[in-house]
Image 1 (cartoon, rainbow, N blue to C red):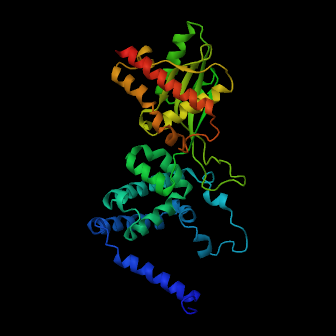
Image 2: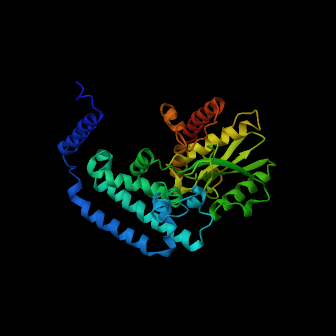
Image 3: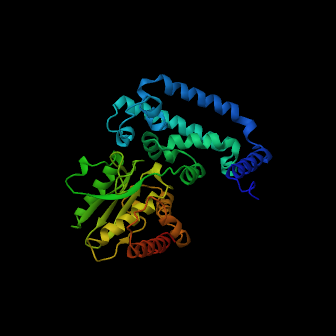
Length: 354
């Protein structure tokens, strides 16, 4: 009895069963098909990383061990903010880092598809790839690149990166733009023309309009001391809304074409409701079919798709609100109003197009 309880013997038994588990598990059926080709592509990327001076800043971001290996400031505390900051990069460094990280993301998606990581994520043969992806995903440059480029990758791959690599798009916020600041805000040229067209129409009716930008903030991988959200770089604008403040009605709600189907529309609408509830006691409404009303498109199907793209089933709401895109301080009243707007807009939209 005394021998079997010896701690070293217990450790050996544990190691033995771990070893047996690895030996008995069948090889992944996908590994042999494309593993060598994927490894060769990785080797090429690592060679570019090694030989490009403009990518040198990624060494510390990708590999936490770098500081110890180079014996940098071994007697002082690690300045994490300087390691993950992007503000001190030159324009050339940022450009090279962005496109290099996009090449990494493209390789990741190929690995995901070729090795069927959806089914074999936990397989021992794929452990090296997953650990490597985690090294990359911790990088501030990689996170910014992912936020900008995630919309160009498949939805299953996006979901995989969120669940297994903690890669998030960021946090949705809204900001108000004064009527005399349109030309100085971050709207693109197409959106600016839309906004001015809508304002010209409603000025004749002496309506009181308010422009709200919907923005996406990328979080720093290094939390603050009080664990608050730390924006990594200036926000990205992904859409806008125009509200008639007299009627408290959303007249226009737009998410940029290339950023749809990512959950940004729902997040932006809920955030807008929460912000408006603090300045007005009147509940927000939404007008359906706004694109065709303002003749900003001649395609009725586009208007229908636009309205449907910002709606969601109530059954999925609990999952939706767990998304990091939503603020954690959204109250129950805002959620109830969000649901009511979706139901009301769908009903109005169906009546309009029947």
